[in-house]
Structure formats: C-alpha cells, structure tokens
Image 1 (cartoon, rainbow over the protein chains, first blue to last red):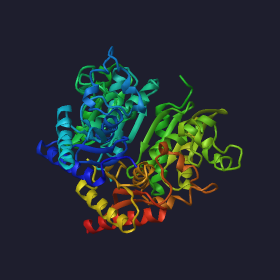
Image 2 (tube, chains in turn red, brown, yellow, purple):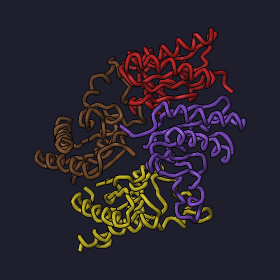
Image 3 (tube, each protein chain N blue to C red):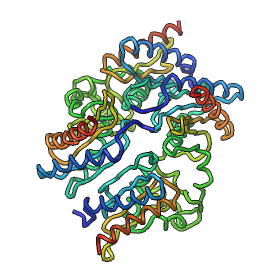
Image 4 (tube, chains in turn brown, yellow, cyan, purple):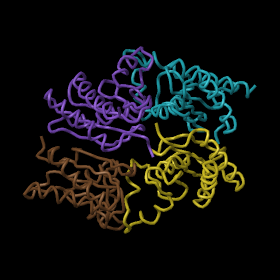
Length: 139
Length: 139
Length: 139
Length: 139
C-alpha cells in the first residue's frame, strides 16, 4: 500500500474545504487522492457543476502525478513555452489551472487535493483550506 | 428522474431552431440535452457537417455541465487566461466556442441546447431561436 | 454526401417507432443513422434508460457498419464461434443483440435504425415499426 | 437540476455502508451517484482494492442507467442469453455483477449506490446496508 492519506483524514480535509466553500457560497467538487493519484474520497456539493466532477478528480491526479500545485502549470504549458503539450498527455487527465495541491508530510507527497466549481481563485481558496486542515492534522 | 426538458418540448425547440437554420440557409446539427448533459434529442439537417454531430452534442453537454453559454468560455480558456486548459478536461467533451446554451426555468438549469454547422455567429443565432422557443413554452 | 435517409424521413421513422413504444408502454431511445453509421436523428422518450442512449446509437451504427440486423450477431459472437471478439472491435461500438436494422432501398443499405429501452423482443418490435414505416415511404 | 440524493444523504448512506464493511472486515469502495449516473460521493476505505475505484463507480452508473440492481444482469448477459454483449456497451461502464442498486423514492429512481471490494456477496451485503439507510431516511 502506498504511504498516503487515510480515508479518515480525507474526510476531515473535505469537511474543511466544504465549510470554506459554504462560507464563500460556491458549491464545489472536492477530491482527495493518494500519492499515486488514485481516489481516496470525492464529494460533489449540491448544485456544483457536473464538469467539476472530472476536473476536481483530475486536478488531484495532476498534483500527485507531478508533485506540484496545478496553478504552476499554467505558464509553462502556453504555446511557445517549455511544457506546451503537457495538457494533452496522460489520456487527458492533466489539468493546468489552479485548484490542485499535493499534500506533503516531512517533505514527501503523501496525497493530493483537487477542487473545482468556481473561478480559479475560489477553487484555490477552497483547496487551500483543505491543505491547511491536513497540515494541522499532521503536526 | 431528472427535472428536465421532456422529449415533446425538445422537439419543439429543435423545430424552431431548424426553421431558423432554413431561413439563413445553413444546415445545422441541433441537440437538446437534460440538466446532466445527457441527450434528449438530436437532429442532423440534410447536408450538415459530420463534425457537427459531435460538436453539437458536446456544446449541449458543456452548457449543462457548466451552467453557462459556451461562448463565454472562449476568452478565459486562451493561453495566459485563468481557465486555459479547460478545453482538455471532461474527456474532450468541452466545447469552448459559441452555440451551446443552458435552458433555464425559475433560475434552475433544466437542460441545454447545442448547435453546430456554420460559423459561430450562425450557430449562436440558430441556438438562440431554440432558447427563445423554450422560454415561450415555459412562460 | 452519402445516399441516405433524409432528416424528414428519419423523423417519420422515429414517430412510427415512438407510437409503437407507447402502445406497448415501454419508453425507448430511437436512433436513425445514415449508410455510414452516422447519426441523422435520435430521440430519448421520457423515462427511457440512460444506458439506451449509447446502445440505441450503436445498434444503428452496427447495423449500418455490417449491413445486417444486430440480432444476427448474437450467435456468431459466442465463445467458440467464428466471430467471437467482434464485440470488442470498433472502439466498443458493436452491439450484438437485437434492435438494430439496416434500412434498404432497391437492395442497397441507405441507413439504419437502432432501438433500445426494453427487453430485446420489445426493442426489435419497436424497431420493426420504424423499418415498416421506412418501407412504406420508399414504395 | 436533478431530483436526486443530496450530498448530506449520500454521506449517511456511505457511512452506513462503511460500518457494515467494518463489521465484516472487508474494506470497500462505495459510490453514490445521482439518477443520471453522475457521482455525488465516493469513498475508498483504507486497504480497498484499486480496481474497485472504477468498479464501484461504474456499478453505481449501471444501476442508475438501467434502473435495476446490477446482479440482475449476470444471467441475461451470458453467451447465448438475450443481453449477451450488454457488457461491451456504454464505453465499458456496464458492470454485470452484483453490488449496484438503484435508490428509489415513490417509485422513481433518484440515485444509485455501487460497492466493490470483496466477493460479490460481500459487495451486495454492504451495498444493501446503504440502500436500507436511504430507505430509512426517505420514510
């Protein structure tokens, strides 16, 4: 088994993210994945976009698959930049805008979170609440 | 069961769109989907592009999956903009140019229409005839 | 352009099939495709299975792609029979049970119909109403 | 908007199923979908098979897409039976063994549950705990 967030932890992360989503009044889809990018838990809040089911899952996948936040992919994947075309790899699972974050413990990626449902700023805001909760639980 | 446009309504919407397509002499493919982006009815007018069979269906999917007209996606998905990369999500079903519209009733999305077959302006023109017919039937 | 059923004809075929589906009180998804297996028109009756959206379309595809009724594929695709494995070809679009029929004019396939939504017997019954209507219109 | 299980209800359904999975000491993946087969919530219990992430989701999809428990598909899809080949439709999303159930309210399918992680009997046992919880909440 992959050293990864457990379901119990994933639920706490998602709860924190859902709470933040409610505060900003923006229903979201929230996914926690393990360090191999595979699903631990996913929730679609009532009224969240259908498109976000796929995007949330794949932001989590991308963050785990590249060990980095997805917002860092926006610039290098533009035409003419060094990673242009990355978005077409991995059978369309790469998401190159913000809302996906690795979950780190002692310098290792042990999972990831992906949030989709609003503008990119809102997605990042809500995902960061989940990351913060994870850091709290890990400390 | 989905609270959504019924087949009878979808036929009327498509009839109105077909009539407009004939007026502007541009054969179209027209799809009506339900609020979860699944097909209710699709017609390919004689002589309409084969490529439009896929595009029409996916414009309807996109409009339902994001609760917004597809023409609003053109700008934010350009390189350097906030949703660049959205077009690579949802297994290639996202269409980011005009011709897809949600169908709204009392503020809720209950379905969508997607039209393809001409220039984007023509697609939007014909799709709007369908939306107008839906609004007429709902009022 | 492919010599094929026109949209006007497809609507009449689908109307006849819908009427039969109502008589036997079984909501169906009905697709008419052209001789190349591409969609002319598809209707999902209220309450018809979601799974039938895919199956109906692909029964029409299969009937056009092999110039034969889909029920004739059930036996030869059984393990040990000559076409075992056919169901895994064409990117999963081959349907090997009844409900798909070619539409023939003067010995040529000019289109196809695919019906899904009930037991195979009901699918075939409803599809045959569509074929009968087509033959009537062609004579 | 889909008339369907809400996230709050989905969490309660999944909790009940998780509890049953713990009682029989068999980690499971549990998915609740809406009436159009799209995800509401999915949890992978610690130690549950990776393969079950896909299977659980698609059992839920199948039960919603055909309005029936997936165990009822095992017999009719055998070689020589009437629905042989159904398992190849819907882009590989059809699961034809037990563990998927529709969630019914007043005779309408309003969602579904899919459970995977053990022998089919265990999957069905755990899924039924979820269905029972849903029925309790709806009454």
